[in-house]
Amino acid sequence: MTTQDNQNIWSLALTKHGIGTCIHDAEQMSFCAKYPWEVADISGIHGILADQVKMTLAHALQELCQNAQTIPLAIAVCCEDEKTAVFLDAKQNPVTLVYCEMPHPMPRSEIPEKYAASPKLAQMFRNSVLRRLQQTKPSLGLHEPLGIYSLGALVALWLSGHGVSSCMPMGVPSQFPSFDEDSRNLCMEAIGIKAELCMKRAKCGHVFAKISPWLSQNLGLDENSILKKLAGIPIFDMGDCTGACAYAAVANPLSWQATLGFDLSAFWTASVSALAQYEIQIIDKSKKSEQKQKDTPKNLEDLTANDWTQILSNHLALDIHPGPGSSLAAYGCHCPSSYSEICRCMFTHLSDDKEGHLDFKDVLCKSPLGSHGLHCIYKQSGWQIVGMTSAHSKEDFFRALFEGMCYQLRQWREKIPTSQIGPVRLVLEDPWPAECAQWVADILESTVYLINTPREILAAQGSAIVLLRSLDIPTKPSIQATIFEMQERSAYYRKHYQVHCALSQAG
Image (cartoon, rainbow, N blue to C red; front, side):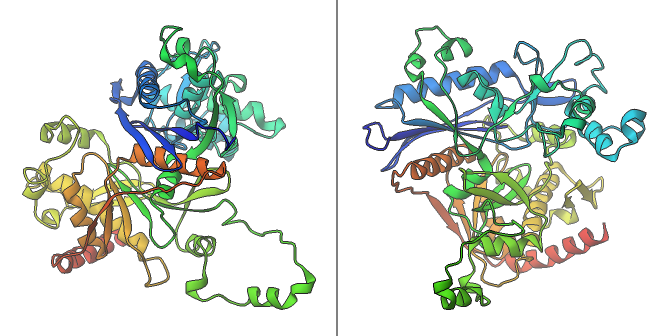
């Protein structure tokens, strides 16, 4: 495969905000673009219209065809694990939005007796996206069986005719879609879906299908469109966008790749077996002395990414996501989204920016350091506002949101059991402008590398680089970043951080 002239990879990164694309060969990324989509609001539930996803995908592929010199060697696809869900009927047609946030939770009293007797089934019923939707849409899935897909599986269905992905939908248990045969029907019944109609699980880092000859028709285009020439090109599932971003940013357990938008994530990549309980090794008895030397305790500077990941798992509740590729996984921490109804209302009144940014001077800087004593506390179960009074403004609220996530990032970093911590490799998403990176450096009292690439494009680039290397095609990636060093206000933020920590512990 590596002897062909078309040694370039096309990459698609699918997030709840849009699609990122790139064309990458052994030398450089020759084309990249971001295609955002709007979040729809239907009956108070937010998601993306499936037709809009289809139209955006068609547009993105057409632009890739127009900007590429040759057809690609392969297409890499990454998406978001456990962040999206869409329901399809028996004819594989979407019948709901592509939901990008969990619907409202249900009280325990709403769990039927047949499931309430089993803690496992009760949890499946209560966490099911469909069951939650049925609180406000009782007829959904009542008269026709439905299957559940993730955004990645839906796009894979249109690309290849096979609804598969390594990234799972929201609200399904970790063993989905494979359950023990005895409990399979009960589990699917509790979730409210039909097993035969659900997506299948792809093996991360491997080919799962080829581009369908009917791609143009699947995307609602003329059968003689420019996309016709893509038929037969292999598609690789590269896992979660989070891992692809971390890989592209060259993140590691001591220097995380952090993304800060309406939620916060901080991740790095390590081996898929980094947290395995044991590892099988073949030991050459003729090299006992060498093995004995390897078994001696390591100095801090000798610890690998796997070693540090094991250490951090004892101090942090780590999330694990598939990819990028077959040998790596993404490890790190995540804050729940703060994009609530309150936040949406305030944001609508403050933002005139079509791109969804808050103005740094006219909005965020109108609130002082410390947000007039307002604090947003983030925990795994959700987030809460502490200290709000009638005197607080919308500007105070948004600055407190931002500062609260930065305080949380600092709390995570302080659990790393060494002082040799590297800089944060930061990506800022809407609504935060680039100037906010200085506040991150001041709150963390650390150097921050602001990556000047949208997350969708960074993920597309990361998955392309991993795939090129797995195909033995050497690459020379380059990422542009702006360096921010902490300034004098760090001393003032230190006092507010101490208050924030006390409030977090008290809550």
